[in-house]
Length: 206
Ligand SMILES: Nc1ncnc2c1ncn2[C@@H]1O[C@H](COP(=O)(O)OP(=O)(O)OP(=O)(O)O)[C@@H](O)[C@H]1O
Ligand SMILES: [Mg+2]
Image 1 (cartoon, rainbow, N blue to C red):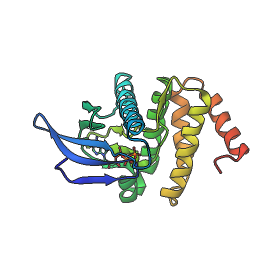
Image 2 (cartoon, rainbow, N blue to C red):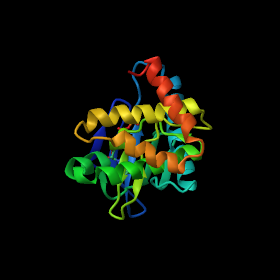
Image 3 (cartoon, helix red, strand yellow):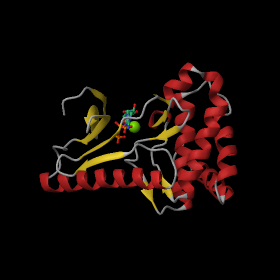
């Protein structure tokens, strides 16, 4: 990969790249030295395929996600559209007065995702990009799943709430706005919110 790294995590890296002359990003799953090489390759291949599939499925369901340009199962990488805009994390840091509107946008889009039986698995404001056109683009489906249960949706919302509180401690009522918008869009939303409460009571994630 020759482009500049824009993110380096434990599981892999994201680089600026191009695809047929278009601005792209390439997300690579790097090998884990402690795994048997053959098994390591299989795990990475499976994860990269799963992530690409979820991004496509969400997109097909009308949710804004990056266009997938290429999946390389040898290098274990996904090359996708480079979405213009800034992460919601950064946008909210710079425009706290927009919090209510952005939170409602987040709630509506997560509801659509859940209506399509997809959970994201890592809902944070760093995994959402606000485009210049004002769309909310959801990225990083590496922890996601499809054909999900109410429990999965509850965990998605619970993790989002917790992440919000730690990433944006000054934004008040964020979760309230998110869930209000979620309820307007999501079929059977109450069941999911009850599940969030149950998860909290269980204390597993607190
Ligand atoms: N398609 C894209 N267009 C523009 N920027 C992107 C795109 N994909 C990722 N990025 C940028 O790179 C960062 C990291 O990407 P991503 O969240 O997919 O990886 P990660 O969090 O390192 O991965 P993982 O959680 O799978 O280990 C994002 O927060 C975003 O700023
Ligand atoms: Mg991420």
